[in-house]
Image: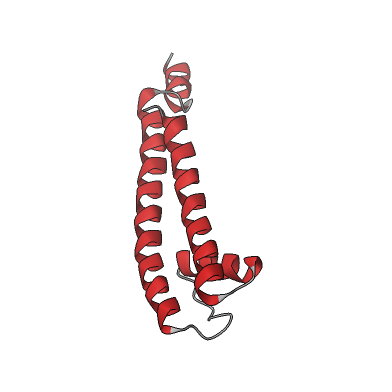
Length: 105
């Protein structure tokens, strides 16, 4: 898989995780779209400012699941992005190797 595809896949994975969280909170806790989105982002990024509204037991269970899903998604996405960047550096596509060659001559 080329590096651009990995970055796109990472972006889609994070976007998908946010969508799961947003709609999960909307369905389980009857949050508005914005409240669900906000809760998803603060949970996924582990900022944790606090709940928009108190969570039910089902909401707490979903949040636990969502934290694990989000952590896994961010780990996979971070790996894909790092791998893509390293591939560019070591393959010479980043311009670094070209610049070094230019100054060696």
